[in-house]
Length: 251
Ligand code: BV8
Ligand code: ZN
Image 1 (cartoon, protein in one colour):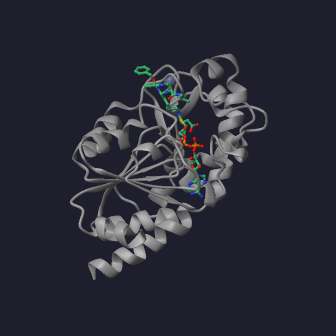
Image 2 (tube, rainbow, N blue to C red):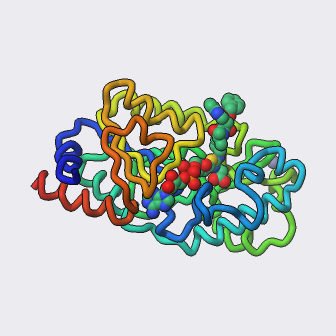
């Protein structure tokens, strides 16, 4: 099976990867729907919403500051590096991710499409002000801040620049992702339950256009029914193995 996948990848005209929280699980970041996924006694769906932020901005900021702290301590794992290597080998065109943890870029992937935003970016809840906390150097200040962050332009509340439930995805990211899916002859689906839309349409678009869906997950997911190949295993173990074999084939 692994050899077959390596040959398919090596001969593919355009392969994309579609990743979810599972690819970062081995970096120590809890997934959303796994047993370790719950944050204290809340579910992300209840916190990652504009309503929750309107009702209790402090609780939502506590949730995001907790996750920022976790993610800052996390390092990319071999799965992230394997995808960056596939891009360097000229096999992977882009990584389309639902994750907000920035680990694909940290691992060296260049063409990364973040469908749900990035946890280290903030924006104003009323004016167009945006800030990348890593670039502005204000990350530590944000993490240790007791009160609520205010916009330096207009004084309104700042919010994480991520897509909450009920919010539209960034149009340019979604259009680029759907455009790539329409042209892809392989989509590598890594570590996603396939529960969240419209992101989860990506593998379906590739499948409907006759492309192949190759899934890596520790258990079956909402995508498995349309997967041509399903590899049950941890992304951090399976992907480096596949890249090893691809290097043999393209040598
Ligand atoms: C919208 C950012 C409308 C925040 C997140 C149909 C069409 C359109 C919308 C909907 C629809 N049906 C329902 C909706 C509403 C909703 C939705 O999909 N709800 C679901 C829960 C039913 N969708 C929305 O609200 C979206 N917005 O549609 O707005 C609209 C349109 C126009 C104009 C106005 C409004 C917005 C959705 C985005 C929400 N934001 N995140 C943050 O991160 O804080 S979603 C959140 O879930 C994360 O991004 C996460 O990545 C994503 C999906 O979860 P997964 O990544 O798959 O993670 P999960 O834990 O579920 O699974 C992990 C998997 O990994 C598991 O399968 C596990 O087995 C596996 N795994 C674990 N360890 C490993 C592993 N695999 C490999 N190796 C391992 N080691
Ligand atoms: Zn503002």
